[in-house]
Image 1 (tube, rainbow, N blue to C red):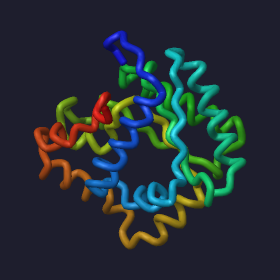
Image 2 (cartoon, one colour):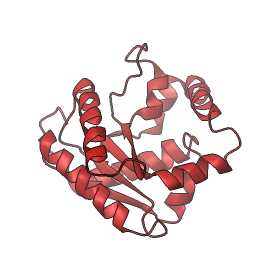
Image 3 (cartoon, one colour):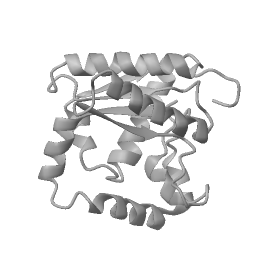
Image 4 (spheres, helix red, strand yellow):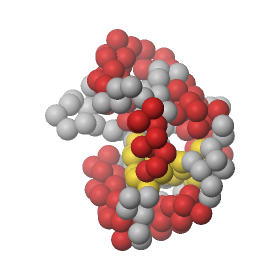
Length: 190
């Protein structure tokens, strides 16, 4: 990202899969991720260019493709942007624009957007606070989810509101060294 080296689509996808399997599923940060992963309903899309405007177009294309697929074929899409928006604040501003773009394109009530970033930082936390890792991915990533699927998953989960708190406890128990030992950053899937 900021090293000047460009990341290939194959590397970005492999690193993101590793992060999903080891951190998100392995630590049970998202209890809904395992089922769609096992059923191979996650689509990994990689945007290699470095311009944010093109990323917005790629997101809208990915949303259109996801909406056109049957959920049993593709339930969710991870749009990985390894070569753009390395600065978290720029990424955060972009997410606001992306949500507006999805709404203008008619996806409000149909798709929702989650986001992950290697430097993700919750408001009020220190940059090195391990709890930020709940939303840290190897590369800037936009996650398109079907609202119907999210609703079904939340209805099936006994205490969905407790997920965030449980994740904070998991990461605090793991600690920064434990998170580092997971080796889920850029280049981890080599």
